[in-house]
Image (cartoon, rainbow, N blue to C red; front, side, top):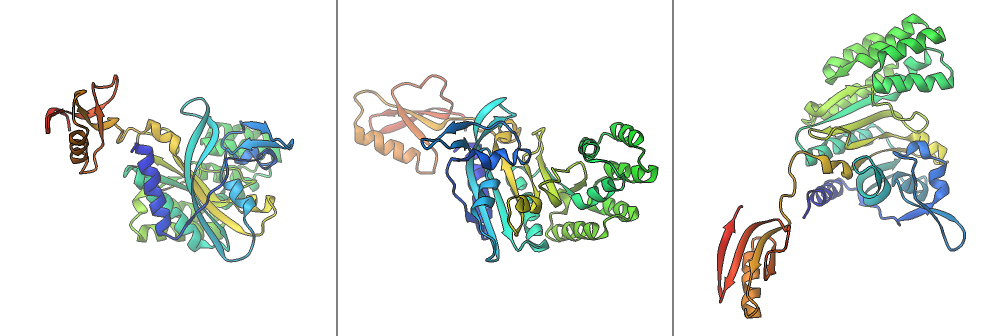
Length: 364
């Protein structure tokens, strides 16, 4: 089994353990679903086709939008996980690809217990990939309050948020000067942008800024919760994780593993997306981008098969099958061949000689 496939099965078991039910969906949706929410998608490049009834359809580039549209309000909390192929431009391949994506969605009467569980599962998902990982957490209500204090118009606000996401202090200075923003408000926002690190280091700084006390309290409560679970070492508060405020609110986060230059997991609360899609429920979730694991520098699949078993044309079929069964009894894979296939990677080379198996090479 390939490395990415093992990760998928491990994530599936993790989510199942916590009561998440598998969500299955078809490969395509009506294009309108994505056209109206392109800013929510990782890429706005979408593969489309015309159905036999004339409707414009799209190969799904996202799973969350389909889950939101298919659900109904009421009935408590809907907790689902998914392992679905999505179709979009991959940064790893620089072109359209079919990409396996895993994740969870929690929709309905979402409270801080649901958010804490989501953060815990995000950390555990990262740890499934690598123990060398970090989850960056931000709180958009804090960012929003400090940006609002600048009194910037909508277009300038977008530029400010872009600078926050890039930690671009010089760009932030230029925008604030050009807009005549209050120097004190600009200084407080710059302090926020520069503030990053373990919760114990960052939370006192946030309290000193005196902004969004309820949001700061939520952030403190959630990070304390994960610390109590022994996961505090994997957390970092970083306000460069901003997301699109037309869709996201409250807690947002992004996960990284050592050896991959970009995030392999992202998510957060998306009540505003729910409102946009005329849902009254609240929601939180995340996705794991398995295509990024192709660049993972940890464990990789070094072989195609564990053992190549060579046999002659006059070998007895029963003897060959008994030998293959014995060599694979411990779970290792075996391929019976007359000669070693070109470019096939293997750990062990064996030959069937009558009823006896002789090991010719063993690189295990």
